[in-house]
Every structure is written in C-alpha cells, then in structure tokens.
Image 1: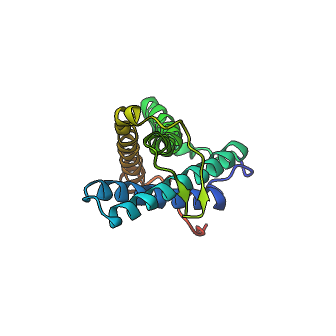
Image 2 (image 1 turned 135 degrees about the vertical axis):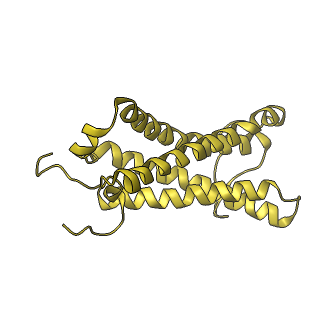
Length: 187
C-alpha cells in the first residue's frame, strides 16, 4: 500500500455505514415487533414508522452506493490479504455485494407489497409516494412473505458481517475493524 492509498474509509463512508446500520437494525426490530401486535392504532402507527424507515433506508442506500461508486474504498491491509484464505476473500466480497443488493431489495419489496395491498406510503406523513406497483390484493397475499424472507436474509448477512469483523478484531487482531470505526485514530 503506498502513501496515497487511504488506510481507512472516508468520514462520509463511515457515517453512511453506521447510520444505515442503526436504521436497518431498528427497522428489522420494529418489523418483528409490530407483526406480533393485535390490530390497533398503535400497530398502524408502527407500520407507518416502519415504512418511513424503509424509504429512508432506500434513500440512504442510494447515497451510499453513489458514494461507493465514486470513491474507492481503502485496500485490505497487506497483512490481512496475505493471511486470508481465498474462500474468505471471496466470501467477504460476496457478502458485501449481497448486503448492498438487499439494502435495495428489502425496502422495494416492502413498498411493492404495500402498493399491491392498497396501503399508500406517505413519507413522514407529509410526502405521498406513488404506488410502486398496481393494486392487486390477491397477488399481495402471495407476495407478502417476500419482504420478510429478504429481511431475514439481510439479518443473517449482518450477523455474518459482524461476526467476521469481531473475529478480525478480537482473534486476528489485524486492525481491520479500525478502518470503519468512527473518530480519529492515533498514529
């Protein structure tokens, strides 16, 4: 790695990473909680919050992808590259790209289901969004599990991602996690 290659992600990349992480985990938790509630005004309120979070996640994911495509991330540290078996490197890249795909697929599937079921999304109660697909209540019943399956798949990849980061930090002690840690790192 030469002197012009950054060893850490940029502040913008770090902020988007952690903001999306908090939003996604919060939305997953809210989604799990609200589906177990009986029909009530509280449940409807939580569904709206969940939709608002989903649209916000979609917007932030677009920003993150745009940033990622226009700003090269730091290369893996040479010591990590040398010590990681090929399958781990491939899993690292595959997991990241699968998570990026799910950052879009999960909220879009939720928006599609909401549109099919005839439940409009009014972002933050102010901005009505167009139906993503036409209303089709029969197909909505068939499509409903798609959003949940995609969300649980994203959750599984997040668990894998966190486990790998902690393994690098606590077992390998290779400094990989520091590249995404907020704040300044002393030399």
